[in-house]
Structures are given as structure tokens and as C-alpha cells.
Image 1 (cartoon, rainbow, N blue to C red):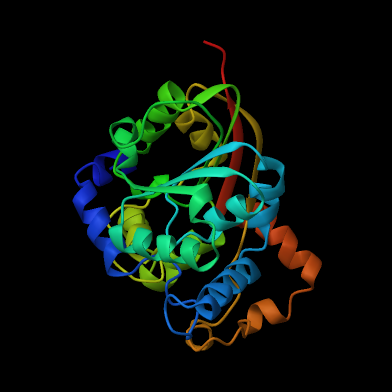
Image 2: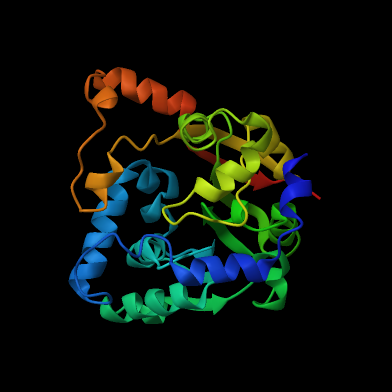
Length: 282
């Protein structure tokens, strides 16, 4: 059964409930939730584990520009766009995530640069006025909605102009993580791969929808856009039992690898498929 047939049986309410139960990265710090110390540690840990994000987002490049972020979560990237001088509209389906993102903007006195909105990205134009943005950015979000193609269509029809960029990260199907999930969680049951990946794709098990993409299928997803760059990155090397205790201890098989070999693995079998695209001319 194709991914579309599996995940279109799900609904947006299930996705919302999942992320309200545990917003992404919410446990990245033991400090009091909502404090400056908490948000500082959340950011430091996120970019320690995923150091390719700032280079992909190019925060400083968007100073004075208008940025639309789809799936902002608790606002780590959002605030960095605003700090760099962008005017940001940030949307998410999770009320709990947006509550924390708003508190974060208040703590760092950036609320005047960010407009937070609750939204179902599949019908985004019903939540925010259709108008063009210089950058539409979505890191790790649209693969969790039942119909990702509808999100892309919304962006193409309502939120870009000729010079806009669309930067999107979706999960990579031919990745180390998919292989690990298949063996460790699925005991090799490849015929259940998509359900296995969805259930184990995030820190909290049971995610209702998680699409994965090859470079070719990512290009197909971005219909109406011209792909300018595409790369894969990010293999999580740490032992989970230590990581949840805020210790970064690598698994033994990653400790013995030379750094250059590990980086080569990430660029071939990384979990994050990062794409930069521009709208095709009408």
C-alpha cells in the first residue's frame, strides 16, 4: 500500500492531538519551562544535534524580508529569523506549541516582529491572508500532515512571488533512521515500513502521519517549483538512555568512526532531506 493510501485515512485532528500532547523539542531542557534559561538550552541543544539548520535557513539573509514559517513548533527557528531582522508570520497546528512560542517571543522581546497563527497548513489561506512572502520555510512539518501536496499547492497559489524561495525539510526515505527502525522496531517487516516509520519517527512514539521521500519523490511533491538545491544530512549518533538525561554520549559504533566517514554517511543516508526551490513561472 502506498503512503498516500495509508496516511490519507488519518485526519488533521489526530495530528493536532499528537503535537499538543508533546510539542517538538519541549524536553530539550530541564530548566523551568518558559524561562529564558529554558529557551536558551532548547536552542543550544537543537543546534548541537542538528547543526545544519542555521546554514540551511540562512537567518541573516532574510533581514528586512518577509518570512512565512509553516510548522513553527515552539519557535526556535522563528526567533532566529526575527533576531536577524525578518518580519515573520509563523503558523502551527498545535495550540500548545504556539503558546510556548508566544511566551518565547515575549521573553526575548521579539513579539513585535512575529505574527503567530493557529492553522491547518492544508488550508492555509483560510487562516492567514493570501499575500506573497520572500521566504516560505518549513522544517520537518509538512510530512506530518495527511496531504502534504495540498500544503505545497497552498504555498504556490497564495504565498510566493517570482523571486520567492521555498525552503523545506522532509524526511529521507533512504536513510539510516529508516533502516534502524525497520530492523530494531520492525524486525525486518518491510511490508509495514510506513506504519513503523510513522510510529517511531519522533521522540514520542505513535505519530499518526510521517511521510518519507526520496530526492525524486521530493521533486515530485514540489510541483510548481524549480528545485535549486537538494541535500541530505543528520544522523542522530547518541544513546537515547543518556540523551534523555541531557548527556550526549555516542553509540559505540559511531564513536569508532572517523569524523570524515560519519559526515560522508550523513550526506548520503541522513534523515533530513533539505530542499530549496523557487516558483516556476506561470
